[in-house]
Length: 113
Length: 112
Image 1 (cartoon, chains in turn cyan, brown):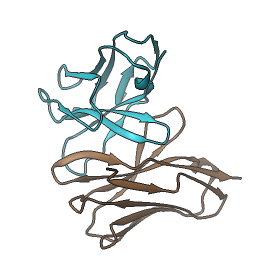
Image 2 (tube, rainbow over the protein chains, first blue to last red):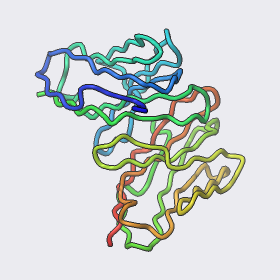
Image 3 (tube, helix red, strand yellow):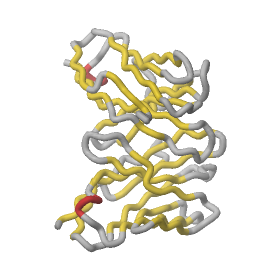
Image 4 (cartoon, rainbow over the protein chains, first blue to last red):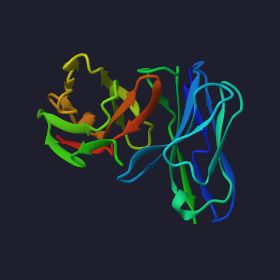
């Protein structure tokens, strides 16, 4: 049982390049999330998808787009990467109701130079 | 506006000691308060959680204390072990809005 799988694990981008972070979960969860983690800032929600077919902005959505491809997959796209987007990105999923455990992937380390 | 404030930023405890991490929240509509544990290079994982209808929840060496009137909750780690060394995040969510708002984290180091 893999849980939440993210790819790639490490990526270096040049300013202005685009890329997509892929995420898949095998727990039949309804809700999926993308968080970023920066030193001293905790985990901040970028976008989430409450259920297949819906997506909503979180706390820090600027510079990102998402696609809920199906129930299993939720991708995060950086259209024109900026150094401020250097961060560790975590995909997560949950059943999708109050109090449900949110399960995180192992993270994607992104550096924009 | 930071809705969940966590302290301290870092904590050093001797093996066998008690580790205490505190969080305060602003939104009285929050009704679910989990703590997550994160080891280096890994994603956060749920450690323990509480709802505001109880004042304390204990699971093994880990206890959450909850003070609804003060809008505060804390994590106590009894008999702290070097293997407990990790970053701990408190979080909160409300009702049907199950998105978690996280504190900024506490780096715990337990010295042998």
